[in-house]
Amino acid sequence: MNKSWGMLFLLVLICIVTAIFRPRFVEPGNLANIIRWTSLYGVMGIGVAFVIITGGIDLSIGSMLALVGCLFGVLMAQYDLPPTVAITSVIVMSTLLGLVYGLLITKLKLQPFVVTLCGLLILRGLARATAGGSSVGGFAKLGFLINYEWGSVPVPFLPWISQGYWSFHKWIPGRGDQAGHFALNDAGERIALDWYDWVPLHPPIIYLTVIALLAAVLLNWTVFGRHLKALGKNEQAARYSGVRTDSMVILSYMICTCMAGVAGVLFSIDIGSVMPSTFGNFYELYAIAAAVLGGCSLRGGEGSIIGVVIGTAILRVLQNSIEMWSIQELEYAVVGGVILIGVIADEIARRIIAARRARQEAALLEKQSA
Image 1 (cartoon, rainbow, N blue to C red):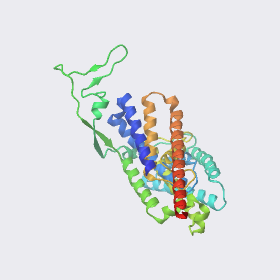
Image 2 (cartoon, rainbow, N blue to C red; image 1 turned 90 degrees about the vertical axis):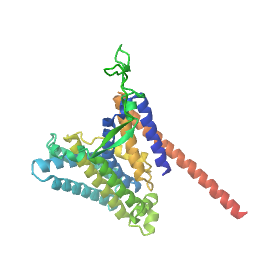
Image 3 (tube, rainbow, N blue to C red; image 1 turned 135 degrees about the horizontal axis):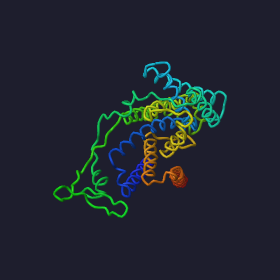
Image 4 (tube, helix red, strand yellow; image 1 turned 30 degrees about the horizontal axis):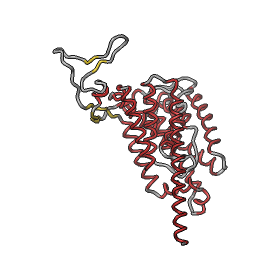
């Protein structure tokens, strides 16, 4: 939880700095887009968190999204399956692929890196074969699952920042040689701005909330979650303690690929078409980065669902900030640098805490021996 508070502070800091220099960042439409994309990426991040907690990895998420999207479109367009049947079919398929991953890792003792790297290549090839090398569409009729505005939330001070550029009146920024100035009404008076604005909400935030709550309960308040963390900390000790480690690993990969299947369906509907050669590229890296930023240790045994959601939000806000600053060519460098700094800070904090705990234990032993 301490790590989550630190990540939340970083998220707020990035938002404030961006809003200061790019007030358009807090326009309701832009904030709605950030929330929507954070929700979609968050579904992937939560899934991969379960695998990382076991000490594993899944590099095939992006290719899984491509295969799910292509197959989803083909089932509806060529086989005239109802959307509910098509969605159920592709999610079941993705979950079964997680079962295959888990069996290869636990029964054949293959390394997760190798298994999922091969999966990345195989699934991408299957996606291209499924689509015949062309893009797959036909998702427009399901757009309400992503774009339906079911409500809105009032956020204070947004007009003062986005339209007033940190003032109470509407400001027109300068262009070229023309200086910026306050907008005036017909009476020649400055146009006052409301003190709040409404940010629209769309279905993806509901999906993320439900999935995150279920995942948090599963991870923190069930025997499965305790066994999963025990497996990640020390697999051999967990096995000697009676934990069915193979089953835990298999289930974690099934959860991961199931969430990838759900994300594949949602991304397909959101984007509107799926190009098998590019759809989902690098998505697995964003999912893994969000989990690591959120407190999941690549060594296994640690993880927080709320941390994963915050980590996902940081990455999406960073990407949006980069677009606001018009430095898209530095996107991967900036995101990678922030992730590296976060991981280094986390490692330093872990070492400081471990050293402090060691000193306390030594002092306690010395006191007892005296």
